Amino acid sequence: MLLTIDIGNTNTTIGLFKGDALVDCWHMATDTRRTADEYRCALEALLKGAGIGTQLVEGACIASVVPQLTATWQQLCERCFSAPALVVGADSHLGITLYYDNPRELGIDRALAAAAAHKKFNSDLIVIDFGTATTMDYINSRGLFMGGAIMPGFKTAADALFEKTRKLPRIEYELPQEALGTNTIACLQIGILGGYCLMIEAMVARIKAQVQGEPKVIATGGLAPLIARHTNVIDTVDAHLLLEGLKLAYALNR
Image (tube, rainbow, N blue to C red):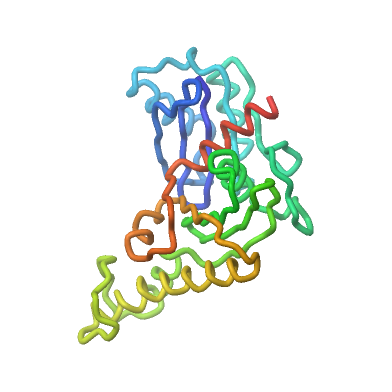
């Protein structure tokens, strides 16, 4: 079995693959204050709860956008499993070509999502990852990553508004049919969720105009199902795209 670990800014997602099949997936808060021993206890508890002994894990693959935790997870994997963990980085082979001024500046999460989507769909693609930040990248059918855009994540932007405006209430993220709200809750729902969906639609349209085609739009990340319910520009939601990218990276680089 292969353990894949995606260390994000807000959450760390752990996937367990048996062959090509994802057999289990867990999420835990990303916390730079936790030690390798603390994360090890949490990981062993998750595996035990799933009825999986650590001896069944034959390899581990890590991607991290939190440098402080990369060595922490490497260390715990070395203690838990017989094989050392593979850390995917800018020099790793992903089966795509990065057309980027400095590939070392490209977040490995963006590269992995693009690589997994290219292998899975093999067409012109716009890959959107709805996380702490929202990233939107274009990769063509020949596997050329052409760049993209980074914007505040949906919840990141909403939380900033609520923190800076004490009188505005937090809301349920549902979208009224009307374009004009007649109460504060509806105004916030229309402005925050409706406005964010319009931004995504405009960005997708702008990319399609530049590449002069109709690429398939693939969405991933924790907030992808929410946004996809309220816009028609997303063709497919793939919740585990980054984990599949890690599995691909492990196969190409181990």
